Image (cartoon, rainbow, N blue to C red; front, top):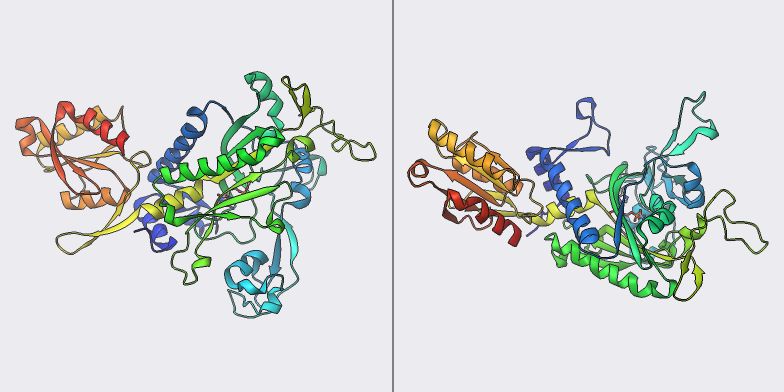
Length: 475
Ligand code: GAP
């Protein structure tokens, strides 16, 4: 089982402290979300898993953390200033604003491709009228100014918040290549915030204006790009399923030529079933990640060398040539780039949806269990005293928690009866609960309860840490 809809996760997140609406006390900000005590742990665990799998466990990767605000020219030569826009339409009746392509995806019929919203009779989701303006491009980059400027539209001070982490990797290609003494193929990984002034953010943390990306730019010889692209598609699918996401809720989508970004030769998206409640199966899916073959576009565009047919430099502002010299063949060329790019926030949402299950207890009550992989669980173990009015039990439980916490995230909780405490930990995905009872004072052993089976086992205190570590690693 997985969550029946995103709303179930919204409510669990707010109830238990995964994700809260940002600036809620001032009415919120539509698409901004804050990650609470459990959300920040889950997001950190997802990022660690990604970094470990793709940086530490491979021989061909380096890491990077580049700036969010770069020289504006980065975005000129990347093509974002000219082309990073979405088609925006307004409803003339109620003035609501939408992304045209998303309205078509969600409300249009598949045999009406190429027809306008008006021709397809697509109704405004807000007021139900069919009275649309013509679509016009809306650039998604957030603008800001750098330094103490006299006017907000001083072009010399104009800068952007990065809309993808990728460009910081391209502009550092030579720095990383030279300092790490790498040879092709190799890749650079980066995790960081990105910002897009989305026309229609929504669906909780699925589409927001501020989000976090985990991106890899993998540099290869042009002839190797096709094979490397497929290898990365397979590697990404296998990492996603390693997070516990079921293959039946994932599918690949080959982008059509008119859908490709300006830099892409081929892009395969991995879709997740984010909208299982929709009757039309084809509309249940949306993008979890994209894996693009960006050709040699980026390194060429950021280089001082290439010239057009008339001998004019493509980039008269760059001071560096980002071509690569292959000592084996004595050839110089611009590497092709394979780019697996995935959002932390969308991954977190997919992980929570897929881990969501319900189980009925012996009293006929429905309990939520978040069956997170132990590696991802925000809390690995909760230590619970059976009787909070018995000082020796409380003291033993608190001591145990302190002994466990150097090797795993452990919490102590005595704010309810044991049944309630178990239910609370099940709902937030804690793999194990340790209960200290009257007998523990005699036999120096505790009861360990498994989140998924609800089975209990008696474990000696001096073996507890090793016992838990072994099981947390195994799952
Ligand atoms: N560098 C390539 C790139 O940025 P993208 O398909 O635009 O490609 C990559 O974004 C991933 O970033 C998406 O698959 C998604 O997981 C995440 N993402 C993009 N826009 C997002 C948004 N507005 N809110 C949340 N996540 C987003």
